[in-house]
Length: 78
Image (cartoon, rainbow, N blue to C red; front, side, top):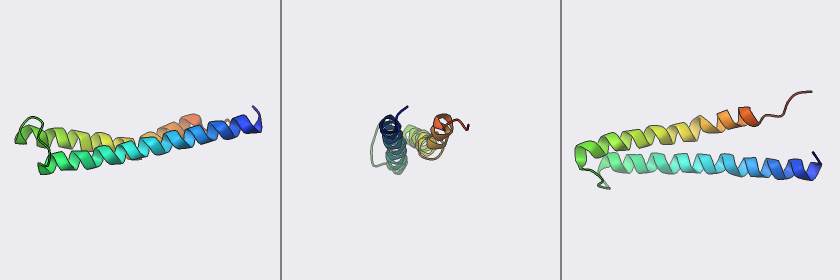
C-alpha cells in the first residue's frame, strides 16, 4: 500500500473508533435516563430493566469494542 492509502485507511479507522465510542456514550446516557424514568417505553418496572440493558450495551460499545477493533486492525509485524 502507498503512504496516502495507509493514511486514508488510518483516518477511516480513527473515525470509526470514535464513532463507536460516541455511540456507546450516547447509549449509556440514554439508559440512565430510562432508569431514572425520564422516558417511558413500556412502563416503569420494565423501563428500568430496559435501561440497565441499554447501559450495559453502551458500556460495552464504549470500552470493549474499540479495543477489539484495534486489535483486529493492528498491522502485521514484519
